[in-house]
Amino acid sequence: MEPLIFEKSRPGRRAYSLPPLDVPPQPLEEHIPPRLLRKHPAELPEVSEPELLRHYVRLSQLNYSVDTGFYPLGSCTMKYNPKLNERVASLEGFRYAHPLQPQETVQGLLRLMYELTEALKTITGLADVSLQPAAGAQGELTGVLMIRAYHYDRRDFQRRKILIPDSAHGTNPASAAMAGFEVVTIRSNAAGRIDIADLERHLGDDVAALMLTNPNTLGIFERDVLTIEQLVHQAGALFYMDGANLNALVGLVRPGDMGVDCLHINLHKTFSTPHGGGGPGSGPVCVSERLRPYLPIPRIVHRNGRYELDWDAPKSIGRVHSFFGNVGMFIRAYAYIRMLGAEGLQRVSRDAILNANYLLSRIRHVYRQPYPEPPMHEFVVTAADFKAFGVRAMDIAKRLLDYGFHAPTIYFPLIVPEAMLIEPTETETKQTLDAFAEALLQIAEEAQTHPELLRSAPHRTPVRRLNDALAARTLNVAWQEGSAVYHTNPAP
Ligand SMILES: *Cc1c(COP(=O)(O)O)cnc(C)c1O
Image (cartoon, rainbow, N blue to C red; front, side, top):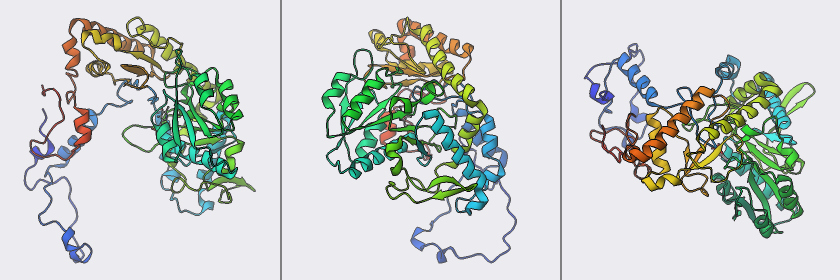
């Protein structure tokens, strides 16, 4: 193993050279309380510039990314992020803009945000959009707060419940609970769709909204959505749709036509802005006429040939993000939408659905689909049948790393035992899909002949299998000599 940067350290080596100080040194005590000052200099590695560079480049190469390989992480839409988006986002006028700049000097940026809003209205068929939320989960919270404001405005204070299917993403119940609602779980039926009888049983004048994901997290389209919408509205509740996974719908189906009142979309999934690693996301929230008055402020408006910020919305829930949201994401999403146009966006959805169906058809005889419906942009299979060999979904996922692939989402959705949620996205070639299918089929063979190979996987990665529960509970990312590593199996 390559020595760590601390082990390469030699006294006096430097990776920088600064000109000599030509101002009188300032005593630190004048600026920092002495009790906060270091007693000894920090023990930093002393290395040359090339060693420092190699250290960081090597670390970056240990990372797996969508730019290095196939990333079938279901419900995450890890598609290729076109590099043109990055070029556009780093144009000087955008890069150096300051959020407090006078509006006259950022007309181009305001126009871009306005036009992105218009594009998202067209795509979703909804009346209006706020770009402020910084992630899907924050879009949900924003939406649920607007739903609360809507009911309070009508003095409908008794609507305390939000109904959420058992297949939903965990952020849905979390967002509803954060906004003070009681979460009620609705069952899925044998076909993997929401159980309408169970929904009807729970609907009443104490329900504020239904939060539905469509296609749901099993990758199945809720084809009774119009019936569902009618039931919800007849009960005086609102219809929230989790649109994080819009990759199956863009250009084909508009949530507005399904009677949706509120929808969040993730620019960092469908609209090809980078994500993962906790980087900035963007979760715009789109609303029907009903919820329009409650949208966050300021709104960007176009008046007399100028783009302006409008704060005049007395019923608004207020701000949910400083300034405008994560503007760099808007630029990338805008570039992507304009580059593809209406036809291109429709093709994205069609190809995403085609790729998912093709991949499923290659592995379905070995990896069972618990709800055998034709999937949309992603699908769920179960590894439960491998339990007979002492192999679990986790072992298959870890073994995939040895084959050079990122693992799919596992153990989600919660209603499928040993679930594997696979989303290939539209940007992969048939050859990549075939290679991934071959790897999965070979691993299925190994499960029967060498199950221990799977149980001790991965074998070829920089670190072996980690004890993630231990790592989460006693996280320690600081290097110390002989510091604990969260391995469950010994290093090679
Ligand atoms: C990704 C996702 C979310 C949450 O989005 P974040 O940006 O991660 O907060 C919510 N619902 C579904 C269905 C998702 O796939």
